[in-house]
Length: 477
Image (cartoon, rainbow, N blue to C red; front, side):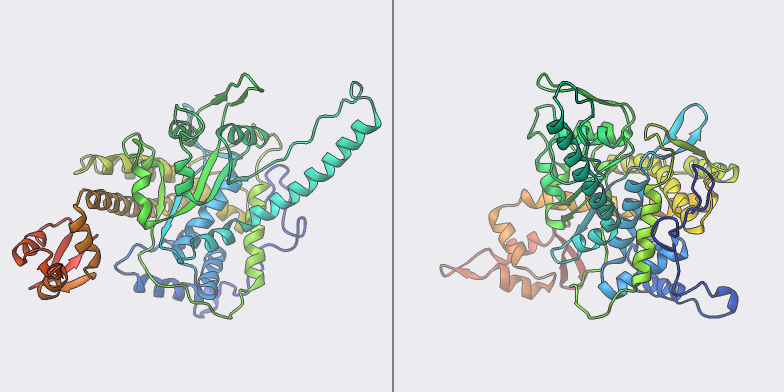
């Protein structure tokens, strides 16, 4: 990459080694087969009816990392592609902003992302890989903090407290997992560049809303997503103000608890619409294998994130503002002006509006990744990054609608009687009318649970069942 601060080349020789020493060079110009391109084509073909994360938005070097981890660790492509996007966002923070219009409309890169899956889907393992370079950086910062604290306490013991003028060391954090609202603001004050809420199970994070104050944390996160100033005033301690916050959120959840994300007004106050849902179409159990991931690729990924962490000015309060190149801006505005303006459901409109704003954030993240990998300085955001950002719009829009549909189904399920729920849970995913009658009308205390007529009426509920063929049904809950 190019060090923006002084235009001096800044590779891993000047940091920790060589950046992006690819084991499989791009051999397109040699007339040979590109293995990464073949892998991506195969994945697209395999997921033709699904919504696979578009990893072709990334430079070839990042695509190669994703393919390697997917093949060797068997982590879903969606988790890896989105996890890298989130880790890059958390690393960039507000070091850069995108100038959308010259009247002061600027966008930061913070993302609120939710990884959805079943138990055992490798959600946590995939996120651990994606955020490991930031964890390495935090370990280094903690070691420095401990050493500084030892020196500080030694200074106090060797001089009178009134004469000791050194400030107490502050621990700089990039990631938070367990915290109070006050601690969140405090840690962000200590690292004004960025902070990321990194929670393994986001459902626990949601349950903590309203735990510490009656006003509700959802409104605070709405403000933090938008980057509006936040102030905390406590009679027992120091007040803190974030005039330009940049907070990201990343974590996982299970399909069965998706409905909790829409509770307490979060489905109508805009909170749900700010969440980027990662919802893989492929369902399979993670299988172990003994293959080892290429260490060069892991080092390359670590180098990318560490270089993104070093971007920007020395002053964390200052941001480098980058405009869209003319062609990219015209293309983006034309795309936005031609988006639908009428929707069947209100939530579709809300998702559309927030994801349009996310397109701006995606474009800047992708441009910074591209410039880092290519070892070039960034001057404008290109049309290539805008086109790739729109691919992400399509991916996350599909997932957001899928999650809303899932939530509506779960909410409807809660309105059923216990008998209806019991029958629904016992029915297989697909069944014939005869198989359904055998299950639903089984004898309890020598009497049928329900009559055949009642079951056939039950089958007509389109929110619960889909007719796939003559006398054949699918359980859609």
